[in-house]
Image (tube, rainbow, N blue to C red; front, side, top):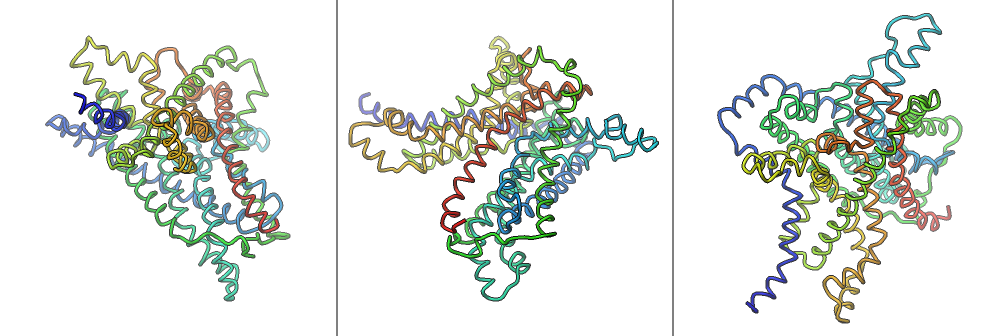
Length: 551
């Protein structure tokens, strides 16, 4: 027994790591495992789906993805080029203003535009009264085109941020070489800078499309038959968990494809070029004057205006018009539920991510790497797939052992919600913690072990103080993601545990858009926190280069 104990103790962290990864990967495994229940009934259901709803779900999802992909590229790439390559009035401000739409959940933007642009909205009402017109004067907002509009202005910062980073770090040196060889500015942009930014653009577009696939609020509110909406219909309306699981596997396949494309683009991004020389004169922005400066200013202003300023103004209108219709008495309860769930998930996610990153740092063996990589995939899994994956094994346990009360434990308490949140958002905290560990020299670990510190003492006394900023950033990102999360919260929330996101969705679906403005604006305010953190980080990274250039 004495000879086995040290081996068990050494293997214990790996066993716990694998257990944590298995718990977080269970929803995806359960969805994929639903095909093991294949029988005649399942085959008939699949044939009926293929003949009826599946082609529509696939066609609508593909059309929406193509439109959004074109939209985010059309807005993100020009903005990145303008703020990186050129200098014009307001460029420094636009560098962080263009990030503001990240604070707007897409479904909140959809509520704002619908309230203002619909047939009975203030704009069409004013147009009919002012010009003596009748009938509908603007296209229907709740349409495939309207959804593409909303997603494009909400998600273009993914492309803008990655393309801007690629252009700032890799393009200047080669653009300077092209200038010395006699190439004009159009050729330098079209044949040097933009091709080098292509992998970054592809990665940003893939991230935006994963958000589109994971969305439920916009699609359900606009009545668009996407895969996510189909999963909820199959589960909640038709009560067919097998059909819901099969739809979830098809959707999961699309997500895996996008994830592969994103990772492939990021691998190419590493070889797109070397780091730019700080002394390169091409690193200095090219000054624009006159009409060109005005065009650049307008092109940068439009995404910010459409993706943040106007939606916020549209939601402030009902607040300014009549404060009495707003549910102030219930707002604090909704806010408390959101903050409580966000805080609990943030703490658990940071602790889990810290444990995973620490185990991988101490011993990067293949079982540990595989476990961490499995957990890292959680953020790419849509909330609808997570919900189906959680409820499938819970339903099986409830049917086999009704006295265990597994169903009530998951759906009548916050346990199910926390589980779903951790499946999706632990990877967000994990990326931050791994980035924090990358800045901690391994020599500190060796020094601490030489002084007798190891295991928990090393993590608590050496790593914890050095990872404080990374842990805070991870907790903030997870907290904001939980506050905005909608699909899993709608299904798994216990009775009388409505959050700001759920209430905003319910009020908007009941056409009480004025009342939905208050919880929606609260989500926007919370969403500004990581945007501010991101903008400060980008400014801190830019200062050394600007000092070298004398800017």
